[in-house]
Amino acid sequence: MSGGSEVQDQTEELEQQTQEPLREPAPTAPPEEFTIESVMAIVAHPDDAEFSSAGTLAKFAREGKRVYIVVCTAGNKGTPDPDMQGEDLAALREREQLGASAELGITETIFLRNPDGELYPTLEFRKQLVEQIRRHRPDVVITHDPWRPYALHPDHRAVGITVADAVYPTARDAIYFHDHYEAGLMPWKVGEIWFYGAEKPDHYVDISETFPLKIAALKQHDSQVGRSTELEARMRERAVEVGKEGNLPMAEAFKIVKLRR
Ligand SMILES: [Zn+2]
Image (cartoon, rainbow, N blue to C red; front, side, top):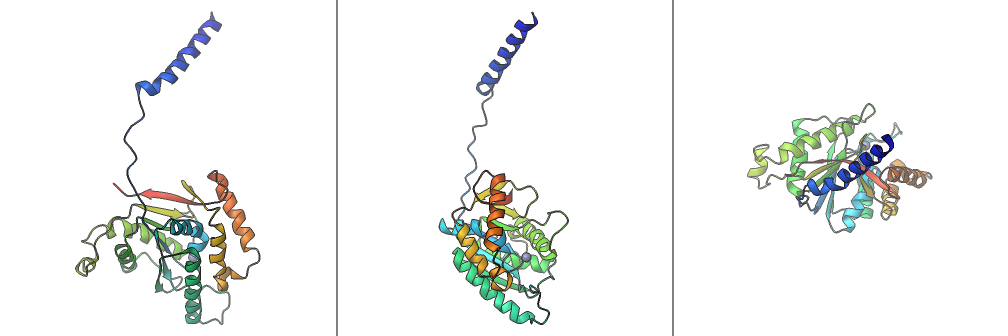
């Protein structure tokens, strides 16, 4: 009888489903031990770290981790005012960045002062980043996703690509930029790169508690967004939207690439 056999089939299927885990237990190897003691955000311009990941950076800082921000350009073209002098703007933006870093509890902010809008993934630029990685030894490096399709600031693309190349294999292998080794800067293996602005993020950080710090930090960037009356509402809306994807009240999102073995 078809009805009877269907019930029997379903029962067998159920038995198979319930027995399967017993016959083939899930791999029991524990997840690899990976502790984060130090985090480095490497960004193109002053304010990029705040827009993308300030909530996450503040959270790491609150947890007692060492947190660094490396700003690759001087941000000297970041103004709609054609009469503004680039040098004055660069000095102003460094002060703003230091104010923002203070709000977030950043351990140290490093300015590489390359010309705004002129970054390329050169060996010279990679060497600057490798030096910072070897000096501060971050377990996680946070940066721009350079593979985000179509619309991307060329500096963001250059930073993301150069960070990826600096982390693996360059900072890890002493043979690269051997003068670092001779000067006492040892090779360093970064455990993970967290790319922000990714098309398909796979990691969401709950920033509901550090969101006010993110806003306070962004407001320090007076020449950029500090006076915007819509800033907080806009950022809140975005954080809630990203949070929904990760089942969190408010979030920042990343695509993680694991390099540890
Ligand atoms: Zn930028």
